[in-house]
Length: 601
Figure 1 (cartoon, helix red, strand yellow):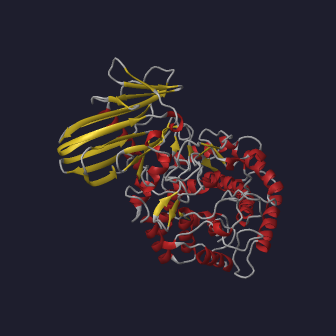
Figure 2 (cartoon, one colour):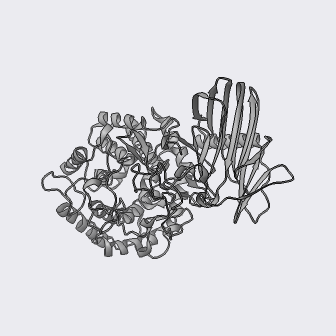
Figure 3 (cartoon, one colour):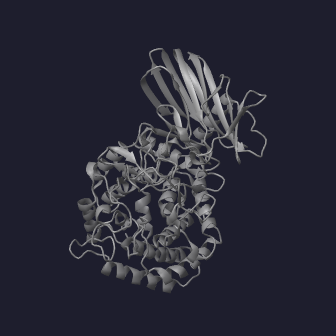
């Protein structure tokens, strides 16, 4: 039985990552990259699908854990009747192998420890052949995969697992290093655990010093930035939405998706978070990844890609996995990559606009934008699948049309501000046509606010962004009415925001999900723009309280079970935290700047 979602912490090497539970079990690890098959899959199955646990044998009376300041090094301290021991977990930055280092550090007394390693490649279904090498290391091989465990502790094979029992006393440190390489290559060289710890800590501390964000929320901002960095595939610059698949949006239900990919939807808000906090190198790498992934014909543009820009993300079900707390199916891949979403064109144009303002674009970027605009002019008036990737019939979603307007608006702004050539008059006309249609067909005649779709008068949380995007001014009565509609129709318990009314929507999905945390941050931003900063601050503080004990957020929050839900940790939630924190502290106002640059204030 896996732990609750909020009981996990993240470690990683900026190419892949692992989730470590409070009980000392690594229940999720994909290798060699985020979307590769898992060799520890207990998170969405059971212990027999792969895990690696190191913990005291005797009863644990207290557990305390934290990340070392400004790092991704996790320390879990266990208190027992016999003494206190700490488990230090981290992944060194990738060399020729990918390594997980676990250090058992005695802090007081003498503590008996147990180790259990259950390696199951290919999402928990393949048991490797295990042998001991002349160097005393344990070698596990299955098909293309090879893992090597090195430790001074005596190991024993038992029931297709590797186990060990050992004792640690105060002042002692017992290391375990698990290394992964392709099976056709020579075994990885041994890692010096102490040196690796020192180097890893130095790397993260140096990276953290680049942060320019201060104020009362600096700790929360820093932890969120480190989390985003951990979700970055450093060789390519791609940033995954989450490192997990099929953690349920609704416990026991089927709204379980694979989020180990890069969404265009997140592009602009991600750029703003990185740039506003001082991380221009990461913003540049993300921009380059974005343009490389989108290279080709605009009509082939997708809503998501793999970290290397691969397009075919075929969805299938791992039917041998029981699902997290029984939530099935466990999906690998994401069929939404085939969807038609007009909003991604606006996101691309806005992200490129923001990058150009910071000098992060090159000479080929404008040519790509012009091709995108040719396509937007042809397709903006078509129904689409919408930002929330519903699996029902395409509709004329209001937010999709707003983002088509954003595409045209940013094309005009870039041409005018930077002297770039293009059919600017045609783009201005297109911008005006889209704006007029949205204001005619996308406004609820009874409430006066913007509605979910032309044929759906209900609220949609995505419309909280319309003033930030510059589509209307913040003092426009229609924006205030839109925010009021969201507050009236989509507020769940604890004041959190639902994306839309899933119970009453023909969206092709099971009804019911948790409150979407990113949308709750968007509401806080909208309240700031309406001059309701005190309410925004109270909502933000409430959102901070939903972080787990090491500062991580998932995609959603189940207000009934009072638990984190959905894939974890979720990049968009942490992006929202950073941007809202900056808005509230008035250190930098990325979302408000985004609107002002659109020329609407």
